[in-house]
Image (cartoon, rainbow, N blue to C red; front, side):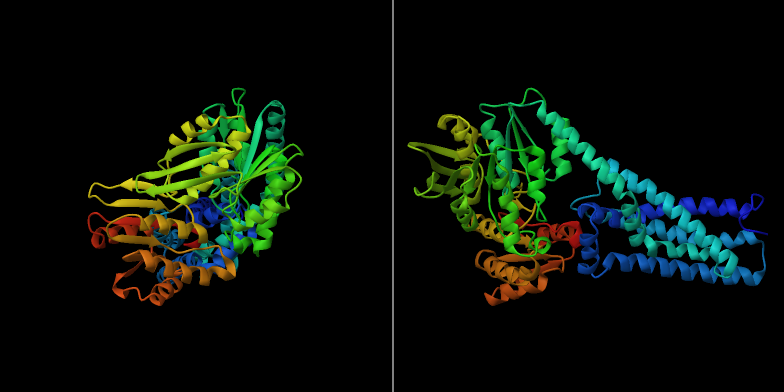
Length: 544
């Protein structure tokens, strides 16, 4: 009987199996969709993840395919030898579906720093993938039933091995629509911004410190203005577009847009959307060096904010950053302000006193001076406060209003956030991301505390060719401050250990775990009461 026949019951069973398999493959492929989303739906970083992780997840998926295929083949051979009813040929699928479900449960129970977000775009990918996977599965069943009947339904077990390519194929097929949809939202946001001609628009960029500076500036400006700031770490075109469409209204006087970048032209694109009149450049460093290729491209990309400002615009530079100082000197298209820790800067702080309860300093703006206090820890936060204060002053705020705003600042979650535990221990949570400069500053803050000091870190990533040496240096710096170290993940363990050994760090005080969850369990065993624990950096899921 022809397999494709309305009277063939096996065809309908094959359709049902194809649909069920496609739904299961969506869950098996969770990691591939998650990485694609983290890669901004771009192919290159998606393949970079597969290469950098040595295909670890792909290997697990392949093992699932091979194991279930073998079990189903054995079952098929046994049933074929008994010459029983054809419907028993489906029996082997029990092994396949059972092992697939076990795989899914284990995959979903694994900790994730940034879980897959089910956005409208991801839903379109999801349902398109399910349709594609259903068709592919049915075609596989038809082919092997017609031309290689001993394999029969065992061939269904081959579909997990096709997941990486099917995910990409669906993404490519939807790309033209997504581009059109992207432009539609961008135009909607631009039209909305035109309705607010008096709106003060501020762009903030830098290799690090963007989000902290955004929240600091928002808090200070709120003493005088109604402020709309892009939430969390929304710093992409769609993130800022979402903030404009959903959160901006006629009550707001100020819009603050955090601007992130991984490739040349990213900041320029964001500036074309927001059209800021004011800007802050927090830093320029080697963060995301892997995607940019070299430091010069990072510098040029961050400077796109300065180049995009109007003639009457104002840009604030963090003078404590060497590259920012150089960019300040070359800027002549707009008004400029530079901030730092001595009186050669336009806005500066001195008499800085930092302890585990916060920071006190004297703020100088022009001829005015005022003593300020904040709960924020570390001199890098004073740099961020100075930049925000300089711009607030330019926007007409008095130094007293600025001080009041500074006194209300709260630590940003996972950015050197102080957490006191019941056993008397203290956690310094600086796990959001990591950079070379940020690592030094986090260790400086850790050094201020009394008690046994423990560092929990996976090291530094996204530094390209400089990653090895950066982690060796980081290991040496940790050895100068910490008593114990827990290295999370294998990515940079060898280099961190090398740095620790260079400073004769006690080997018995170096621990290693594969996940952050296991590191937390280990902490309960090795960290006594009254310890101070620094969580520095948390690998993004595309490094796991």
